[in-house]
Image (cartoon, rainbow, N blue to C red):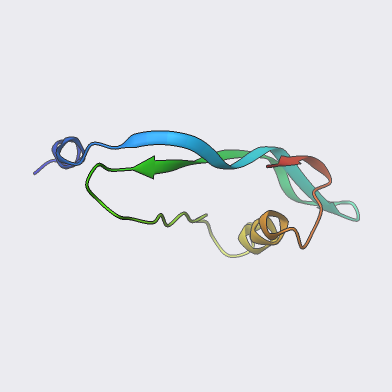
Length: 84
């Protein structure tokens, strides 16, 4: 079954935004760790199903995934941009 057919078999509804990253940048000294990252995570539901969501950031080693997680958790403060 093609992927688009599988998605149609399980319709979903987007609700409120759970996490919003707006042009987030992080700099240590003169080195940019993250630059202008934007993303939205919305609450998604499927009728008749109890579910949670798994969201991840993928990328090669050293790309800034851990620093992004630290920003989202509030352990670091971005150099610019907002996290809501």
